[in-house]
Image (cartoon, rainbow, N blue to C red):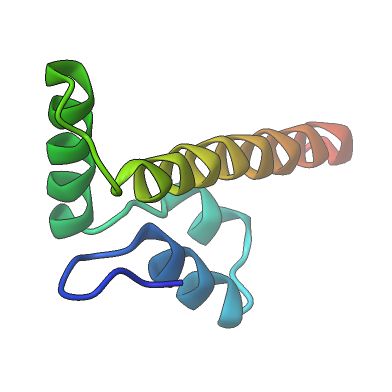
Length: 84
């Protein structure tokens, strides 16, 4: 689900996995500067107590961050098991 007129981590993560990335592409994947700016904005709002209906968007970003961390960790684990 994308939020109108704002970058969305969901869209970016789906796009990279739709292309069947290899380990190096997954490891090198970074969200766009626009999405990073949006996440910073949401975090600042949360800290200031002004986050409203955007809480779901921030939660989604946090979930994707955790998911990517787990995927990268698994890729490194598999690489080490293969001795590469």
